[in-house]
Image (cartoon, rainbow, N blue to C red; front, top):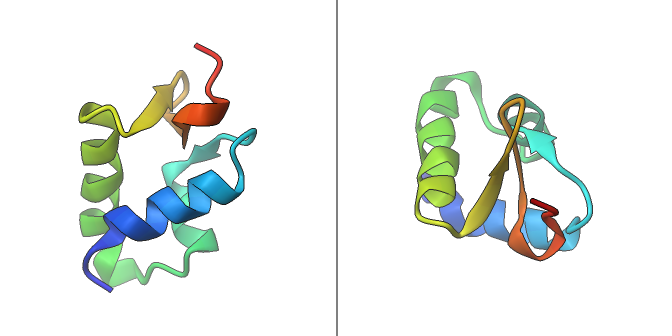
Length: 68
């Protein structure tokens, strides 16, 4: 799957009170090694655009569960 945005948003919305490191999230979503760079870029893009929360220690979380 090339478009990771929707997959990441859906997964994070299912687990709103939990934060994930990007690598942990990639494992849970079954991202292949060859696609990890694109996946990481997509997650960081979601954080930059404000669609997900980026927390300290390189963690991400759904906005609804983020306590900033």
